[in-house]
Structure formats: C-alpha cells, structure tokens
Image 1 (cartoon, rainbow, N blue to C red):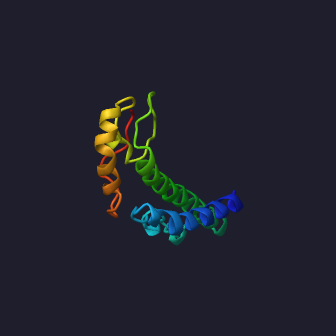
Image 2: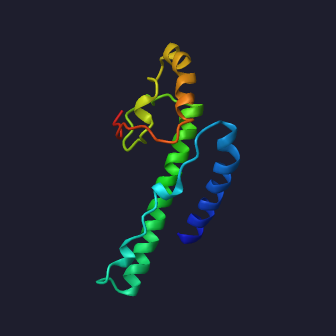
Image 3: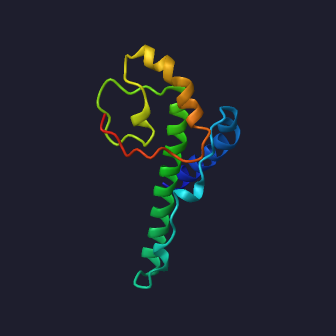
Length: 128
C-alpha cells in the first residue's frame, strides 16, 4: 500500500496548494494529523519500529486527507445525507438537513465563511 499512499499524498498536496486557495478555504496543517513517536520505544525491534512508522504515516495521511475532503464537502455540498452515516467527519453536524432547501440557501454562505478559519469545528463525529 505504500505506493498508492505516496501517490495519494502527492495528489492531495497538489490539490491543497492549487484548489483550496481558489475556494478561500484555510489549508489543513499536515503536522496536526501525523504523529511519529512509537519508533522511539526501546522495547520495539527494528521491524516493529518500521511497521509503527508505516502505520503512523498511513493513518496520519488518511486523517489529513479526510479533513481536506471534509472542508471541500462543506464548501460545495454541506447537506446531510438522507440515510444515517456512521463515522462522519467533524464538519458534518453543521451541514443542513437533507431536503431542507430553505436552510441550504440561508446557511451556504455562512458555512463557506467558516472554512476561512484554520481550525476545524469542535463538534464530534455525528451518527446522522
């Protein structure tokens, strides 16, 4: 999986530096999603440390990508789905309800303005 992950990383890097500024969305800070620290544990052997590095990179990359995509979704389509979605991102609870055209028109500009801040929303994952 390392080659597809590296390719994804490259694509998301380009997307974030080219497209995100066009939408006036704050860039995601890469360092917020990556934690390389398990390799410092003395009780792990070299193979275990290598595997911990791979997992830290993979999970960090996917969290980083999810935040970038979540911000993009909030900009273009901040509408909750008709069916329940498990493991939704932190932006999802602020989205308007499915089928509520009036709320969508009223809230779209506000939801887009929120993206100009650098901090992700404080709300936890939603089960809606």
